[in-house]
Amino acid sequence: MVGLTVPHHDTLQEIVHRIIPDAKLVSSWALEGGSSADMTAVEIALAQGGTERLIVRQCGDANLAADPDVAEHEARLLNILADRGLAVPRAPHVDQSCALLPKPFLVIDFLDGEPDYDPTDPMSAALQTAAFMAQLHGLDSDANDLAFVPRHHGPPGYLTSRRDELPESFHAAHALLEERWPPSNKNPPVLLHGDFWPGNLLWHKGRLSAVVDWEDTAIGDPLADLAIARGDMSWGFGWEAMEAFTERYADLTGFDLTALPLWDLRAVLRQAPHAADYAEGWQELGRADITETMIHNTHTRLIDTAMAALD
Image 1 (cartoon, helix red, strand yellow):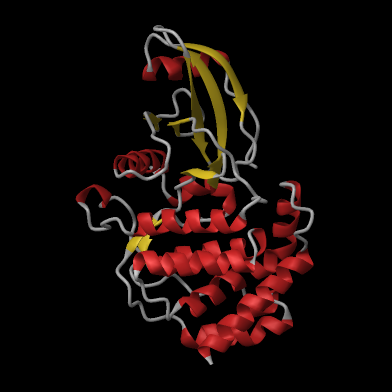
Image 2: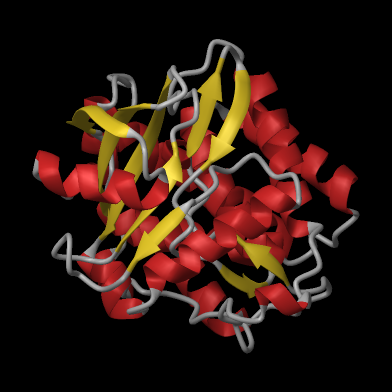
């Protein structure tokens, strides 16, 4: 995680004042689990009675390097998505001046829910996730208010890992992907989340309450999002749930999944050199059953399935 430092009380009170002038800061606490931003929850007392919670989200260095306006862009996108009925938090305030905090930040609604890395009903979780992704990918990516979202002009590079970083048993998959990339794109470009894994899905009483962390949003091939989700879901929710997720997504969107095996190979081979780190992270999140060996075996199954489909 980026860090657990809570901004000074007076600074948070000033931020609250800019959003709700007559509200008073009651308490604040750091939120754990953020890998791309520092997040602080605040509870405020409203002048008319009652309390409200918000989250102050300071942008991380990597996202600021990629997009200096990431705070403004994420806030704008969240409000657009919320207006279109998607389960995302709204962003009532954004500040890129660095006058109050050392980094640009946005303030988002505090929604009930938290990530569930070991759902009691993984099939239901998978189907709900598919429904959200289909809703997201069904938006008009050419809408004027989405013109600020970056576009992939052609598919992204096929790999960020080298052949010598991969297990020897994955070398054939690397060679095949290198030979056949880029895939043909038979689907319209869509709005992508860009990092669709269980840590960015919030659940409340068994229902998907929100999808968060939209810094990697772009417009591009829908199979990019689908493959990312399939990789983590294959070991987090289980193989059958992953397959049900894919089938429901295909039914809801009607998209052509012919090129999905190539996207699966790309997603797996990007992850493979970091299997030990992924395993450590999942174990810290309470999944002692997810080991480096388990991830390697799941990667192998994904690769074998993709290779067979491409044969």
